[in-house]
Structures are given as C-alpha cells and as structure tokens.
Length: 117
Ligand SMILES: [Zn+2]
Image 1 (cartoon, protein in one colour):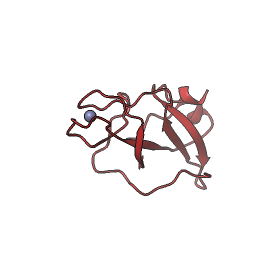
Image 2 (cartoon, rainbow, N blue to C red):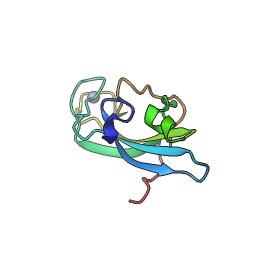
Image 3 (cartoon, helix red, strand yellow):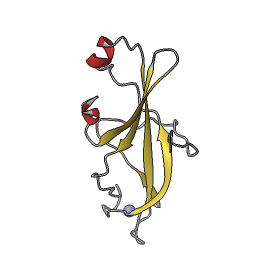
Image 4 (tube, helix red, strand yellow):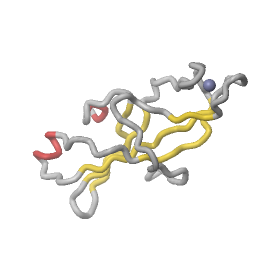
C-alpha cells in the first residue's frame, strides 16, 4: 500500500513519522528492485559507496492525508550513492534517481541515518 502513497514508481515508503505539530514525515528508500546503472557508461553497479539523505521537493499532499487532517507532508529520501564498477569510466560514483522525483541541487547530506535502525 505504502509504495503507492504518492504514486511514484521506483521508491518505497520505509516509515511514516507523525511529528509533534501534526505534520507527517515520510521516509523513502529506492525500490530494491531498481538496478543502479551508471548514467555515463551504462554498467550496473553492485558496490554501495555511501548513503545520502535528500529532501525532494514537496510532493502533493495525498488525498488520504488531507482527509486525515494532515497539514504537512515532508519527504526524506535515503538514496544510495554507487561506485561505478567500470574501470574505463570517468565517473567514479553516481546516485540513484527516479524520473518522477527530480534531484534537488545543493540539498543533500552525506551524514545522516535512517530512524530506528
Ligand atoms: Zn560508469
């Protein structure tokens, strides 16, 4: 059910936190079925370089949330950065992306942890 919360393909909802102010924070992770492929050389990677937390631009508040009286829906996406396994490729690492969630330039953090893990 959760993965269809926003109707976004390629990500899954890990956890939904209800904040003290009544807002909701949705933690996303990339769908484990998505194979990370280097955008430069097209070689699939199997080596995670690091995890980064990003905040995609706010998504439309789901109708279900609005019906429940939730005023604010924040999204945090725990992306993986992969190391390209192609020794001939100039790109050392790349992060996951899905077409429906555009990356936000300048907002990312290399130091963060998922809640309750
Ligand atoms: Zn590559």
